[in-house]
Length: 243
Length: 243
DNA sequence: TCAGCCAAGTGGTCCGACCACTACGCCCGG
DNA sequence: CCGGGCGTAGTGGTCGGACCACTTGGCTGA
Image 1 (cartoon, each protein chain N blue to C red):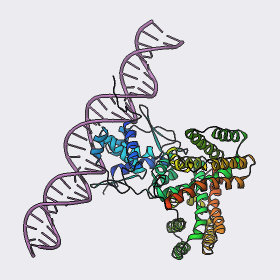
Image 2: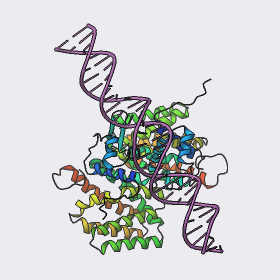
Image 3: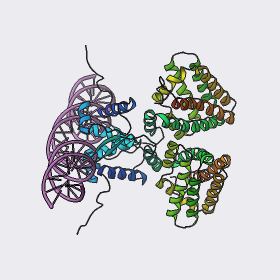
Image 4: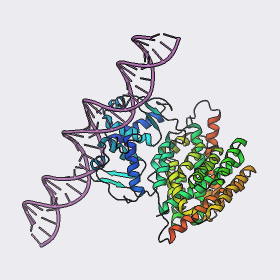
């Protein structure tokens, strides 16, 4: 006799995660909508609140849910930018060969995004890009330069018109990630070159020339990529970017 | 005087996550290494085990940690494929415009990956690709076709030599994701066309022609992309792929 | 020697209490 | 009647401690 009920595949928490995912996938929960309370959900699935909390935490990390202390749990709009955290963390923790692979992915996406931007960018956006370029060249503070560099590329990614791609690139360019690489990179006077590359990208955007933009962006990222690849080869001391 | 320590930024769990991330980033924990027990870690940071478990769960979802029941918690090798789960989940839950954006990203990466594969693929890998292509054409069972289709592209991505990119593509092609799109797509007799496209990709690979491979792959994904975009435009009933 | 058992240790689950914060309505003064 | 301020109920966040399920490795006994 054993009547039975979907015994248990895997852990209880896993089941809870699938359950909530299903609720969203099937449209039982709309983006922005509030979920039942943790206590309710736990009771409903017949599991403890602790386990349910872990399930919620998992979905929160994935950017699917958002918990507001004292208010409730809500389904995010899934509007990109929500999944970028995971990407950023992975990028920050990667090293060696993995880092180069990540940079290669960035080169591919960034060059395409820049090409798209060249064709679609508005005057306002172009002005914003130029502003960051100028600010970057007007200071010597590495911190500030890095900040404007990030903004420069972010602005371009946004102009490409694909939010999801912009979010991925954002993750691939997270602050600590780039800071790590830059430290060593800049010491080699690759500074002027970086400025030249940025200027080239800006020129291509201004000229609305997708092909030139793609080439400039690819070269820009590829430059760093090459340097990193070399570092991994036969470095002995000093460079800590890859190792 | 104040000994003191950064009281608490944000939630306790968040602090725990940062702490563990830092341990890995600073090399205090090597990939594959076993972490202290949950109880230890919790005590060490002065938080409860529940909170520590949530932190661990978060990092597990991100693919940074791996928990083995009865054995311990380990740092993953961060060898790609670990972050693909998140990507897959997001892809599964996305709809409408977001879905198109995701497909666009896939088109960009897939075409580049296929081009790289054309230049680097080995005889063995090429044979494997051909096998899946044949299997795909030899059956009418949608399930089986889908399975071989996925394997076909996976094999190519692997041949491109960038594991990280392959992992991302894997996530972007997750089973339920594609199944959802295919259902409607195939009903329009896009079947023969898909076969033709796959054959074209295979030919380009065999000829070791990167440009042809890139074009074939881009066209292949772009085809589906276009269809989906059209669906979103003015669809009234039936098609459930996007809405 | 080796197979099998046993026990310690670890992650997985559950419970129930309390804290921190938000939201909303009730009450009181204007 | 109106509005602001204070309560309070409700929700997520944290805690601690008990017990379960599984792995591992050593020990026992054939």
